[in-house]
Length: 271
Image 1 (tube, rainbow, N blue to C red):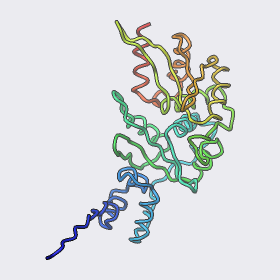
Image 2 (cartoon, rainbow, N blue to C red):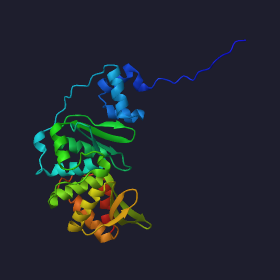
Image 3 (tube, helix red, strand yellow):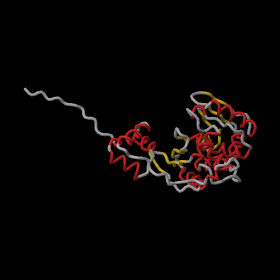
């Protein structure tokens, strides 16, 4: 009598295949993090398999204009807000990454292209799942973001604005933060009507700082603490005051997420 033993064979994962990994990392120029997101594993898993196959890091050929990295450049404050909302960094503070989820009715690629133009960066915008983004590798940029409180251990829960901005700096910072982690609430019965605006953050320190600055420039926000800290305005005049404050066309009019900006313009026409 022959006894057959059936063993469950686990198929090889994509990233465990040397040729596939070289194609994604070297030829397609995807970062370890991008590959990890697509394969639903930790970044360290991809790094370890690259080491196993001796797949060395690519030569970084894309540069930015470091003169742009300056407190007096209002663009940097928008980038700071967007980075705090939707960015991450490498452990050595040399890489600043921005990723923005696709929004129905809007195209974040336009915004990403504007940011790349401002940095005079020739790198590419990548796409994975429902997200688009880019990666910049620059030590000076990493140090600037760290000095502002954006690069810190457990950034999501501990980031904060360490430097008090002036009014225009705060307008751009708030716009970037809102484009990343804010939303516009509206009702639509006979016609669309604004019912509120809000920003979400998991960082208590940032929520406390925003509370002080928002009260100074717009009015005291309503704060709701649940899983996150939600700072919002739910009466129409103050909600529009907030949106007018961040989306004023005199300051970098192309630096905005058009899905939110378009909704704001439509609601404003309904007044």
